[in-house]
Length: 186
Image 1: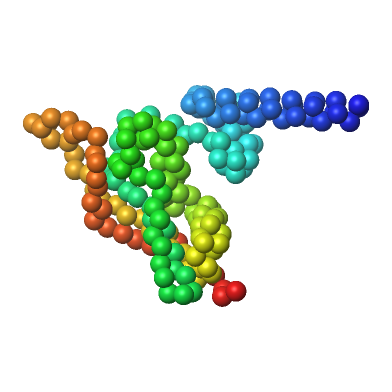
Image 2: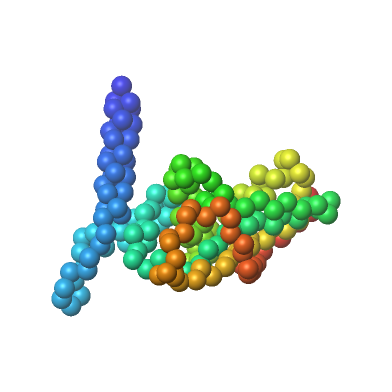
């Protein structure tokens, strides 16, 4: 009975600590004025950075940025198998979805946006390993996985034209392999 109470108490403590951490991460931080002054939110955020990034529960405020991106991009995974065949899955692309689907998959968009940057390089080997395991069972041994950025520049809006509707397709002009993982033959 005592062991059950300890487990329940530990789970409640973990739950409330996680809830408090998520709340701190959801609030935009403002640095207090003055030399060498740091807000409590900054201290908490620094102390919890690793578990928040690891768990995928972090939240940035970049989606509220007044500086819209001038690039449309997509992440493609190029998978080469030892039998010489290839697969080319892409992360979800909002321009191919209905507005409702795009709303539901916005988290995937933010994930792709973050792994697309060099600051997301710690995740690249894990993404490659995920696809290696996912495709191994159905297609056989994987020889190599390339993570590929596809992008095109978005021109600035033309004041004389009506605002564009929700895009249904994007023609990407450039590509770049930003990570390669090679796997030994089993």
